[in-house]
Image (cartoon, rainbow, N blue to C red):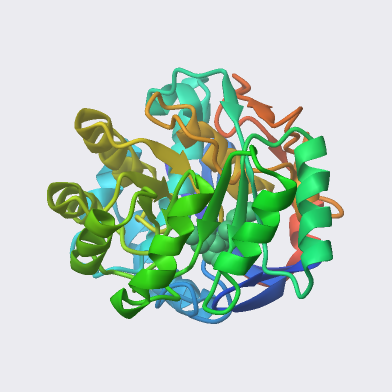
Length: 369
Ligand SMILES: O=C(O)CCC(=O)C1=CC=C[C@@H](O)[C@@H]1C(=O)O
Ligand SMILES: [Mg+2]
């Protein structure tokens, strides 16, 4: 692949509105970008989705920066990479740090696809040209604000509504939403806010015809989710418990979930994402592509992976305008009536506005072969 230079950017971009989950509120997105250049000057881009604080998982921006700066980038420049899959061997000695690994690997995949003159979707084996998307709504202080947000997104045509729940803001909130929206495709994301002691509350959600309940129990848990799934009708969807092909294999074998929210950054990149996709396709476990409040670069990667056949449920990749006054890609990601078009331009299929990247970069480091 003749990689000659790798640039690491520490980005800060303010989202239009704060986003609240069971573990915290975020509005100033702090994330990384990786740019991989070949000797002809062609660039591939990847996004590091860890946040400033390790609340979603153990990863955080500064840790990803150190992992990339001290280990992953210098080692990638030391060897000849002929295919993005080669990075799995470089990554093998290093534990976890999935989001850092994914940022570099995603940039290498984008560059590789551009060198082949093919879209990233095609290179990954994607078959869909249109992808249905939903919207993930944060926790609001008032019912009227939440109901207003839902109405707005239903009017925009989003194909499913995901709302966050936590103890004290769960059954009553879903009941109120169902009162106003009895038929919309609705799911809840608990971000690990419950334990098996809350089984009464989680069973009570069965009356609301939810598409799924996402990650009700502890991050990393497989066993208790298997016990829970036997007790409730609502399909369990795992997010923070699935960090690898192995985790997915064990969760499927134990019946811990009926659906998986796949996030490229959480599982260490596109090569592992593809492996998990194929495993779930074999096992009849549908996937959807989750979001990590990405900039357009991460959204473009999400679109590419979500074009694979077994991504059969609407994901979280809403329009760029969901979060950003101005995205760092052109054209911006636009969901028309809840549908994204997979473009067949080379690589991620969007141009990166390097001036905008530089504007939002609070730190940058260039690594040369
Ligand atoms: O990117 C999006 O629009 C989805 C955001 C979202 O729901 C999440 C982002 C990051 C961590 C979590 O809070 C949550 C999730 O668990 O999916
Ligand atoms: Mg989630």
